[in-house]
Amino acid sequence: MKKIIACGSIKPELEKLAGDDPRLSIRYMPQNLHRLPDKLTGKLQHAIDETGDSFEQVVLGYGLCSNGIVGIRAPQQGLYIPHVHDCITFYLGSREAYHQVFSKKPGTYHLTRSWIDNQTDPLGLMTNEYTRRVGSEMAEEAIRTEIRNYQYISFIDTGRSGNESYRDRARENAAYFNKEFIEYKGADTFFRKILFGPYQKPDFIYISPGDIVKQKDFLK
Amino acid sequence: MSMDLSKISEKLISGDVEGLKQMTEETLQTDVNPGDILNQGLLPGMDTVGQRWKDGDMFMPEVLRCAKAMSGAMDILRPQLAEGDLGNAGTMIIGTVAGDLHDIGKDLAAMMFEGAGYQVINIGIDQPNENFVKAVKEHKPSLLGMSALLTTTMPRMGEVINSLKESGIRDQVAVIIGGAPVTEEFAEEIGADLYAPNAGSAVDIAKEHFEKKST
Image 1 (spheres, rainbow over the protein chains, first blue to last red):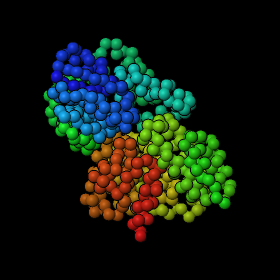
Image 2: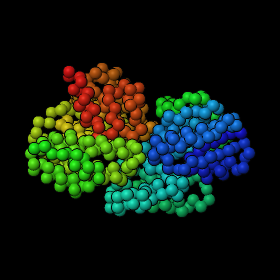
Image 3: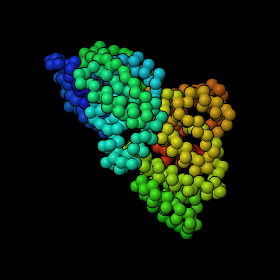
Image 4: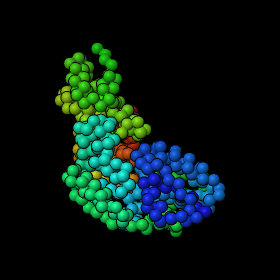
């Protein structure tokens, strides 16, 4: 049996593919921990340490995620980690797709359904968290400053039903902040690999038992 | 007259934009050296802001409000600093590497180096490696600052250093790097001279480096 420890933000995609496959035991962590990389490391290590020795393989449903997984120690089974910088690669389906999107349009704020649900789209951040922290005027100034050099806001459509309202929300973001809206067709290829493998290079990094995840593993 | 400049730091950390402007003006009315307001008030304040952000005790909108307060204070301080004896710390080139469009931290650092007397040439965001090399050749700075906010673009900083080596000008300039995902270990690995964990500490780190070098 296999243990998968994944970010809560990709739960819908993984659940759909995993069904009730008895070979899989999936644990989802609270999403948004990547915004506090130091906390992510601690919580993730705790979850890994709790896994125990009954599983043949342990796989993370995380990428480098703002260095949030740096410093994590692999369990006795070793640890497979997707060789990606962040979850955008998961949604786009492959490292190649990510590389293409990123090199063609680096100034893109990518939105997925989870991000919108979690109110971490620019409008969501502004009207909720930022306004609560600094008041509405400074909230707007802050978010505009943060994304001032971005040219695009994208929606990555993974084909889930009910995506229309999310696409609309992404468009609304683009219009409000004067960005160009673009849409990418997502794929479930990488989500599938997280669940079923093969855990091979270059898609995955293997950390030997007791070894520590390093940033430089991901920069190759 | 000695004045407790930690009040300036506190005002900055609290993100009180108007309050900090007023306090800066009032402090200048006394015979406090404008350089001291910067070095003992504003820079330590921004250093604290940077640390709190890293620790997750402060979030982006608060940090940006502090940056705005800093910027307002610098507008008041700048003419006074220019008149003082701080105006010739050297030339600095600063920019964000190719593929990376983030400039909040980089511009903050630029503002602080300017305040500390550097002639800062800010070459902007998304700068191809060769533009850093070209700027170093052209302006012969004592310091080159590079910023990257993404783990995907960080490696460009190492490439710029290699290009400087290939051009035979690596020894002419001290390289300082920073940005949220950048670590001291990474700085060492790519052969940067200095690593700044945040914009507020960068000036001090550079200053220390040059003082050590000259002794």
